[in-house]
Image 1 (spheres, rainbow, N blue to C red):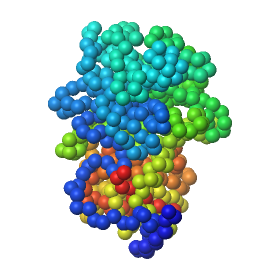
Image 2 (cartoon, rainbow, N blue to C red; image 1 turned 180 degrees about the vertical axis):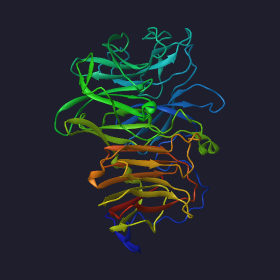
Image 3 (cartoon, rainbow, N blue to C red; image 1 turned 90 degrees about the vertical axis):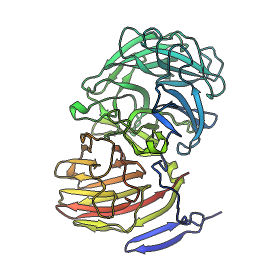
Image 4 (cartoon, rainbow, N blue to C red; image 1 turned 60 degrees about the vertical axis):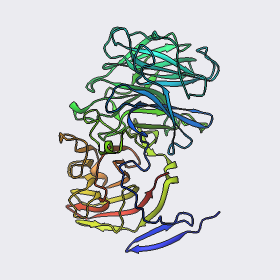
Length: 505
């Protein structure tokens, strides 16, 4: 049926658009909840590292580390969920349970579809290689599990590792890809400050080929390797890893390098990494192919655990029996600018399926502050901001009625950076060290485009078409829903503002 558009004028410069089958919902009297409206959350208990999703029979199969005994017991297992659009997820239960063999619980790794039966478990079998703390002294070693029922349940190949520990304390998080050019499996491994490279023809016998040494970003975890085609048509390899750049004033998220890979060794374009997120809560990230599309190189998807090991248990969701949320799934691309290549990010378009109403605001000039007539706690806000001479400009979101509580997103032109500041609302860092996340901004541009995703306990900000992204956890009070525009030291113009209110699936 073709929907009839309904326009309702609410206030000066504000129009709400409803389709015929998207009428305003009646008032809800349900108990308030901190469970996200459109982010993936664990059904109960605990979740942390995501495992790279695979695409099989029209669905994305996603596994994540889950602890059914949280907070009273330890150990993770692989819980399974499926999706056709990367927004709506169906829980499929535990696929690899913990403590089922003498090597303890399964940690992070990766799963692949063995289309050519290289491992001998059958054509199309799913093969997972993951870290377990070996019965031989708890050493981090790699074990193989396989599934012949499309990923519902996995069976341990054997009790001994396919990759014994070579004598290093940190030896974990194997990530496997099929290299089409060399016709072999390639693995990256987190080994302290080094990313190790390995090759195999059958997923069982692995040979070391080289190592990539990182500097000044702490221990690396959850390494990632893939090939992409940039917007100028050239192909490049990207090596990524979760890393800790805090001692150097850098993020504690996903570091990556662009470069070349010859099947054995990765050579970066430059020594220092770039960062895919500048917030405090985008860790253990994975990227994965668009399974539904034919083009595997123009873009990929990415998601991460929205938490931080400095404060993993500080959340009011514990009162509701769960602790664990992912970022929205992003679509990432590779862009050339000034002779260098960088990843850019945008939320997946499928989020639009969950939009309940849309508000479009006319041009608004602000010199000081202006509170909008609209409010919300689960929405996407997009706007262009321009100025001639200004000190600070942005938005106060999830604002309380008395204006004392809010999350600030903006550009501090005087200091040359964009930022997200959560110091004026409840948030997980009790130390006060991680309150404002920043990234460099060329204030000479005198304009910025912002796309902001707000959910019950999170804020994700995409600056200038995703060239910079911030992902942060926040815990505003349920009633804090205001939106205020502000400028300091001059006038700013907010244009093309669209607010999409998002509901539960």
